[in-house]
Image (cartoon, rainbow, N blue to C red):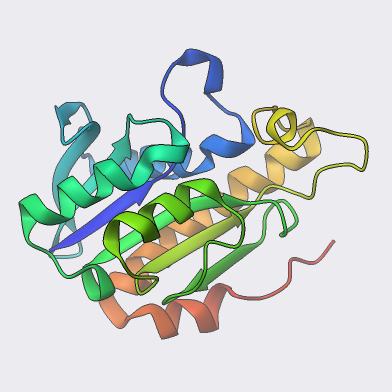
Length: 191
């Protein structure tokens, strides 16, 4: 069984913002595999289903970004999965251009408060993640305003394509492992 968590903030005002790209990706996975992500459990919206024969739990924590670890810990404990091999976290990354993915098997939070909270609650940096580029904040922008802002038309197109790639990356990670997905998707996006 795999737990696939997309990070974001609940409520309408945050829909389609840079910070909610994890939620958007979970929605895309759910659509493709006909998984209903509406059950309220473990301080998250979750859905159960299958991807290529593997049982999956899709989750969108409702704790707000900075407390995502509380929900992830509860899900991990309930389903008794091993985070190092059976957890995939999908989040935004301001250090990557819109449309670029970076898949890792472990690592630091890189300044991302949602990942930082998950690491704190799991007591480990050893879990797979897909970081999705949302673009670097402009010089005179406040970081919070940037990540809670919306994409322009050009960036939205790149991000929508990246969401489709992230769905494919999850499929590869489940079937062939993170290394195979890293080889396929950890490339610079051609501008």
